[in-house]
Length: 321
Image (cartoon, rainbow, N blue to C red):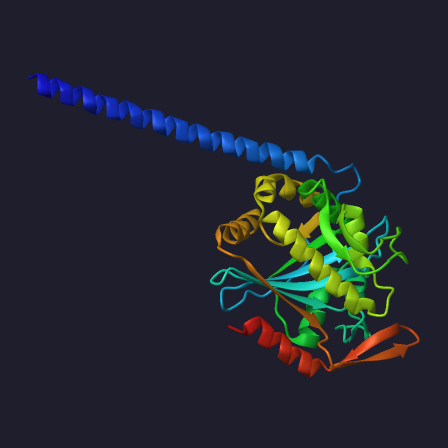
């Protein structure tokens, strides 16, 4: 009799502890969701009125990758109050969930390219020309241009105003991001940067990434952009960066336009964060030995590229095992 009573008490105790554990678990979820929402909207509310990009529902007829990878056209623009912005940064990012690997193809903005429906111009002019016609979309015309010249298909686009880049750097690392500046830089970047290792805040890091007035020109600028992205990747995947993830998403959201749904973004972020040892590989187009410098009166200095060779190398890079 006593043993039966004792067993009953033990069972009741287990049930109580299970209930307590379940309540604590639910409380943890609710608290976590509340913290995430609070941090996200704290990031959103950092945006000043009128600074938001406000470019929703842009036409973009992207194509899904047949091998289950995610291909994204990454574009950086500097509005500075102007509506005739050109894409200062053009990259294609490919994420392979099976390998937890990102490949970045940086496309030089001075490539002399065939723009469907227009004369040949620098490739970064496609975005501008597409926006001039109210019936068209700058991101869609640039997608068509990349497809026409290099036979690359992308599913999504992400358009970021550089003001958002500055905000996200300062939110992620208020103390700055460490960068080794190769030499003195000042022309056309609104400040002077001195050589050596240093902690750089958002505006300084943006100026560093955009500088191109040296012997390396746009090639040096693209190399610096890739260097900055790798430094940011390291910071984002630190314990500090992961804790700030909701606020970072909220910070960048007003300065970003994309055809990715929130579920698409969350799924991609989840895969990247939960995957082990994210690997990042980079490529610059045109590749060495496949271009010549040229000049056209209506266009200016351009890069004449061997499109067949570069198309072959891009496909090899994106499809390599």
